[in-house]
Length: 443
Ligand SMILES: Cc1cc2nc3c(=O)[nH]c(=O)nc-3n(C[C@H](O)[C@H](O)[C@H](O)COP(=O)(O)OP(=O)(O)OC[C@H]3O[C@@H](n4cnc5c(N)ncnc54)[C@H](O)[C@@H]3O)c2cc1C
Image: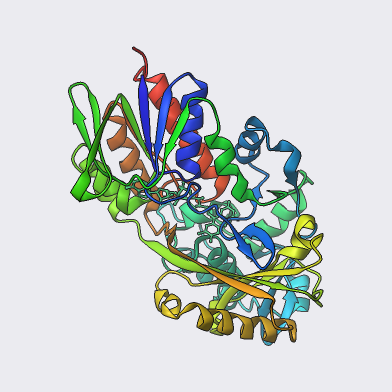
């Protein structure tokens, strides 16, 4: 029995892994010339670094489990520091204790000088989905929303709280109950130390895709854009490659692990409801600018976030050489700046030197000066992050219901139930499991 996976990002590779270890012969068809999707290693100066995703949530098991399974466990490390700051009101201010930006200690918040809670309201949690902005601003006011919640969510989704769904992006805020401040204080007090929050790999998480693809039973074809997926009596027919020279491949089952716009086109004929729901998911574009300096930083934390209301060019910065020991051990200072939120794609229309200069000007202002970098690389991520807007979970339910009615077809990836690496690995493996459990892959 043979299966195809469309898209060689982490979701597709995780699906391929699950199928391959269950004895299925699986081909991963990747449209670009490299595997990994949003995971990517690149060279900056004399260093090889992550230019896309760089850390894995360790509080979920799926990322570390796959790392173990493919033999990279001896490279797993935890950050040296995760002490973050907010750059606002003209300086870097330590991030106070919060639950996704909801203050858990008002005295600490006041001392930080980041935001004020003037007139908190205790209001019931609505049953229907609402935007994060509506929910938080009605209860705690705009300042907490703008200067704490917005930068945190901007970091994860590159989106805006006035569109993002409370239920899909911050269920932990909804779970705080009607009195957000009391809920956050109680949640922090109840939180027990459960080990490190994040993990990475010495040498970069960008090593994971190749390690997964090396699993026996997986074959990979790069430069193989899938143009169409068509159901036939004898299986699924995939049309691959340039329209002038289309190749056809017949398989028993297909996992579509491409971002939502491409996935919607591919499944439109056989799962039109799912295709329609996928097509409604917007994406934010962004860029990561990585700088290498030869002087140590005058800053000790892992980085900072910036409230969009402050109108800076960058939205966040990570001092990778503080965060990861293996980066710091190179003797260089490495800083990653991220640029671009949903609806701000004009920022990315500048050429690379202009982006490098504008982001560096912000970093110099935040850190109070930096030398000229030895090198800087701009990695653009068009269609980087799906936006889980209000109503997202209903869209996902529609997608899942519609796909479940079609034998031998599955969809997975960041568009549905989580954008983080463990979440997309979980979605890929679950999609493969459904095919296996449905008996689709039995002769
Ligand atoms: C800059 C950046 C930093 C991030 N940092 C982190 C982080 O530190 N930690 C974290 O947990 N998450 C992070 N994320 C989020 C996370 O990396 C992604 O959400 C996740 O990797 C997406 O995986 P995916 O497989 O769903 O999609 P993708 O990685 O987008 O992979 C989809 C693949 O499908 C291919 N494709 C598309 N269309 C076709 C077609 N028709 N035929 C064949 N192939 C096709 C694409 O080329 C791509 O390789 C980050 C995201 C970005 C953009």
